[in-house]
Amino acid sequence: MIPKKNRLTAKKDFTRVFAKGRLFRSRGISMKIVRNGLQESRFGFVISKKVTKKAVARNKIRRRLRTSVGRRLENIVPGHDVAVLVFREVLDLGFKETDASVERLLMKSGLMKKR
View 1: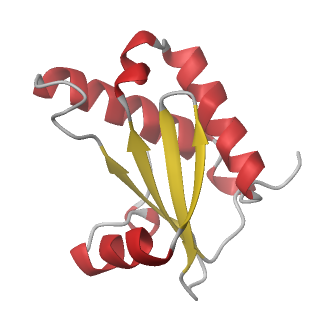
View 2: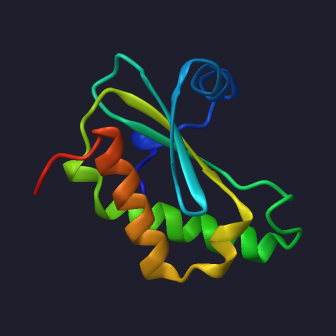
């Protein structure tokens, strides 16, 4: 679970991330990242109906992503807003593959400190 202070929820924040953020892509998942000037990093998850029309499946993907990010929250560099985008390929991935993909993106983008 991600604490409230680490959640990206406002539409204006999502708009800023999509307009100015740098894109990092992995299998089935991509992240747009921009600096926010705050003491913590915030994460928002976007799972479109184009991925799957079933709300149950979209929520399952969202829960997996939140769990994956939440497990690494103490190792993430503060001061960034991150929008996590999902594509259809993620439906073929299990939790371990999704988790590995998120970790790969965080390392690639420089958001995660070395353990």
